[in-house]
Image 1: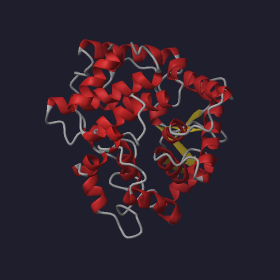
Image 2: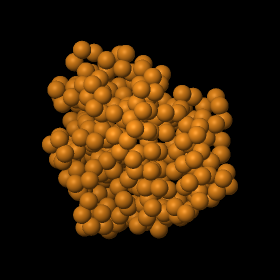
Image 3: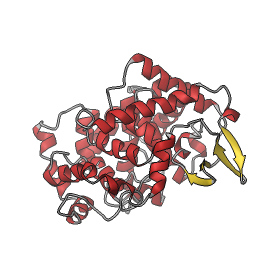
Length: 344
């Protein structure tokens, strides 16, 4: 079985963070299990984790900004991805600091963060909610529950207009969203992927139908949002071209594909969308060709540079073929196991 082969490979060769996540997210073990808990000391000793925690300020904040590369957003993402226990005192302090100083949520993004929130396109508040949700704090934080509702509204909006032209128009030679329309951003999908409270059959069907509609439409060029004559770059791009062939992906495209497919699998809708099921079949073929290991040689800075939209590398670097294969096999394994597709 390809799932078993991938799991065995990662438990033998991967870094402590990946091994911890395989035990928890693929094999279903809780953090309290000795074999999971024992990995926390090694995770704390991983260079990326040590370097981030060494920069922590007295109030818990890490780094000097919020959005973008080397900001708090990327820091929380990476610590979650590294599987550091959110109850670890320094990590818990960092999460508390997100809510303690709300003005900091606009560092690195400025007023654009407020505009995107006000227009329903996922700004600073949505980013904060996603980070708290990824750390497992959905039940504790009202901001997460509020943003879950807004994320569902963003996807519901895709079903309210019959054609792609209803959403977009050309302004200054750029594609912009028409007034009073909405298109879900990567942050809306992230919020839903890491939360549970919304998961009624009705809402799952809503999300599946919305994503299926995107996958049936042609690729959408770079999209901007217009606010009083100002054009604002959005985080809509990962949700604008879902119907792709893996054979056509660039190395950068693979990074976005892995990220998007993992989120859709977490949200529980991947297996409900035929175009995406076909992509999972292609992924399984890659793994089968490598006896459970993703051997395709990929290399792009997007994998290693942790920012708002990039970053998937958990190994310390890809100078070793095995380390690269561990990272790419892990992302593949998550998609296959969480989507419940072709697990055999």
